[in-house]
Image 1 (cartoon, rainbow, N blue to C red):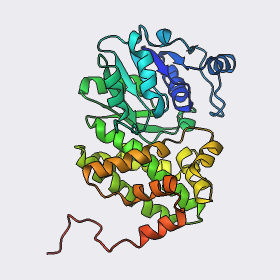
Image 2 (image 1 turned 30 degrees about the vertical axis):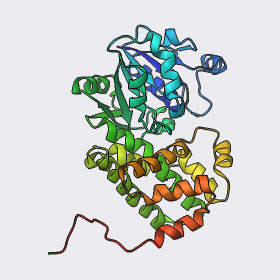
Image 3 (image 1 turned 180 degrees about the vertical axis):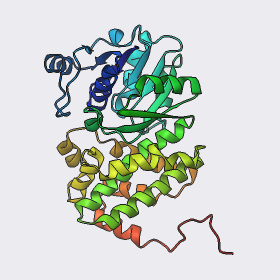
Image 4 (image 1 turned 90 degrees about the vertical axis):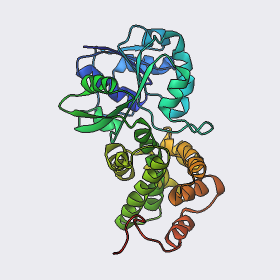
Length: 335
C-alpha cells in the first residue's frame, strides 16, 4: 500500500482517486477550492461522474502541505492551464526525489512546454513522469477496462507507477518516450475539436475517418521533428487516445467542436460544455510548434483559423479537401 496525494479534484483527478483507493492505497484528494472539498467530503460523489462513489477511505483537503507531505507518490491532475500555478504552490512541500505523475494533457501556450517540462521547471528536485492514454474519467471511475501508458525518464520510475496503478480493470504499459506521449495527448484534443466540428456540420463516418488518420499523421510528423519516436503515435497515447477523443460522447473537446460546427463561437462552446476544453489552448501551441519545427499541419492550422480568426468550419473543410494533390506516404516509392 502506498500513500498518494492527488492534486486536482476535477473528473480525472477524482476518477484516479477512486481507482487508486480501490487498489488499496491511502489516497488524499486536494482542491484549491474549499467548497469543492466540502461537497466531496459530504457526498463522496462528484457531480460530473454519475454512478461513481468515492471510497470512504479517501481523505479530502484544501491544504497543500497535507496533500503533499509524506506521500510516496503525488499526482498532478489540475487542468493544464493551472499546472505551473499549482506546482509553485507545491514547491515548499516536495522533497528531493519525490515522484510526481502529471496526468494533464496540454502544451503551455507561451513557453510551448509540455506538462512534465513545466513541472520539472518548477519542481527540479522531483522525479517527474506522465500518465496518458484513452481513458475517460467517466469510465475509469466505474471500473470499465482501460489501458494507459506511464512514461518516465528511467525505467525504474515507470515500473513503480505501473505497479501502483495496475489492477484487473486498469492496465498500464511503460514507455521511455515521455515527450512523444505528451505531444500525442495534447494534440489529439485539437484534432478532436475538428472531429466535433465535422459532426456539427452534419458530416459522416468518412469525414471522421479522414480526420483521425490524417490527424495522427500530423501528430507523428511533429513528434518526429521534436525528437520523439513515430511508433509512439500509433499506440495508446497517440492513435488510441485520438480515436476515443474524436468518437466518444464523453469528450469535452468533441462536444465543443460540435457546437462550433453548429455556429457557436469558441467561448460560447466552452461556456456550454462547462469544463476546460484543453484543445482550444493546445491549438495555438500546436500551430507555433509546427512553425518552429517547419512541419506541415493543415488540420491544426485550420482549427486555429476557426477558433481565432473567424473562419467558418465549412470553409475550413473545403480548404482542406482542395489542397494540392499529394501522395499519402512520401517515403514510399514506385519501383
